[in-house]
Structures are given as structure tokens and as C-alpha cells.
Image (cartoon, rainbow, N blue to C red):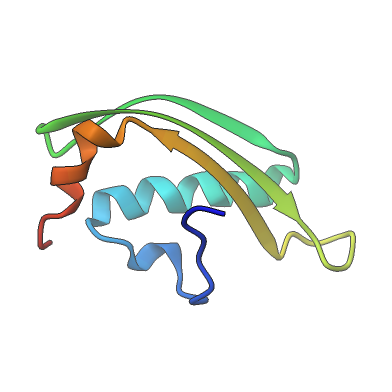
Amino acid sequence: MHGFDLTGKSSKMVKPKEFADIVFESQRNVTIRKKPILYAGETVFMDKVLISEYVLRVPMSSDDESVDKIMSIAWMNMEEARDWFKQDF
């Protein structure tokens, strides 16, 4: 498995804040709909870098009612994004 989070930290803690806001909103939508959502598109961060990405977010439940976990599978063109994400925000 590549890149999974076991920290228990909120996605709102991701930097930069603009990216955290996008991630949090997509997670919130999955929690509300209680159905998988595929996000596909291009995002421009801070008018500097274009990132093409595909993210599948799947709601999961330990009680078959409430969404208490979200599994995410993502692909993005990291060659273009790598240097941008290395910045100290």
C-alpha cells in the first residue's frame, strides 16, 4: 500500500490550507452522500502549478449506518507537483 495515514490527524491540518480545504470538502461530500465519489480533473494551486488528478473516495462504516472512515485511492501527475509540495508553507 502506498501512502496511507494512521496518524488520526484531521485533513484540515494538511498544508497548504488551499489544498486542505479541497480535501476536506471532498471528504465531507462522501460522508453526506454515503456513496463512493470519483473526482477527476485539474487543479491550479496558488496560480503556480497545474495538477491532474483522479481520486476515488469510498465511505466505510463500522456499524453499517454512519460513515466513520473514508478510503481514498488517488493518482496525480506527481512529476509536476513534487517540487510544489516540497515547499515550506
